[in-house]
Image (tube, rainbow, N blue to C red; front, side, top):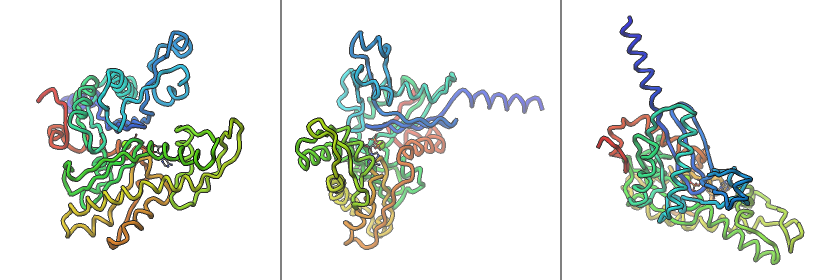
Length: 355
Ligand SMILES: Nc1ncnc2c1ncn2[C@@H]1O[C@H](COP(=O)(O)OP(=O)(O)O)[C@@H](O)[C@H]1O
Ligand SMILES: [Mg+2]
């Protein structure tokens, strides 16, 4: 009897000594979830006070996420994850990525002194160098970490691992990945740069051309897009903008639609290329199993428009995921808890002090 109690205690204490996390490291937002119920989302931005006066106002910093955006007048903002992975990182990017990841891992620990292990999702085509750079950062906070491709995590979460194509429309990149029942290889994945940032930039240009004298910054365009993005004209976008400094209303529905639509041909071309790499016997099933994820999957009418573009291919079904903010991160956590740690090295690039 006593022995059983001891065993339970040992089990409980070893359980409490370690948490498992899933992390989705995005250009725009980073999400983290733990096996103890932590669930956090932050803008992937780190702010440092500009000077001694700013420091007096906001403290030494660093300041993270939304708070950094709100206090941006006082801060130098650093977006460490350009194009979804740490770009040819400058010292500053590296430091900011390090601080951002450390901050989120700390929050996920909820003040407990525990060991952290977990899986980090990055864009499908992140180079080995970028993955390794990321791991050198992760090893500062985590006892064991694995880096895997993000669309794979989405597919894993959905339990949709074969005859499936995942399209992840993020801020920096669109990642498209064919799932064939195994961990995807480079040949099954493609990344291109027409993500949300591209849409914002094009939308700002389009509105300025349409209404000369109207001032539209990238962040205003982004806010308009997030509210009205559609490709079927179903959302009428009448917004207040400044014309030569004075506020006035403008109908930008056509601009929003045209710019959102402009990413569809590239997406379809990449689907067409990927589909040919599936066994011909599986192609019909795969075309009926196309998944849209990432923030850009919220563009109204996008799934139907992709179906329409692929009209020559027979029956095509495209479905947008319910929870694009957390699905990648939830997939990473699911993978981390379901696959024994000793097998992790088979599914991605990993850091493991024991190997
Ligand atoms: N309702 C929406 N319609 C269109 N785009 C959106 C919407 N909501 C968010 N986005 C865009 O999705 C992108 C962020 O997607 P996310 O998957 O979080 O990116 P990342 O993985 O690169 O961090 C941003 O460009 C954001 O503006
Ligand atoms: Mg993402």
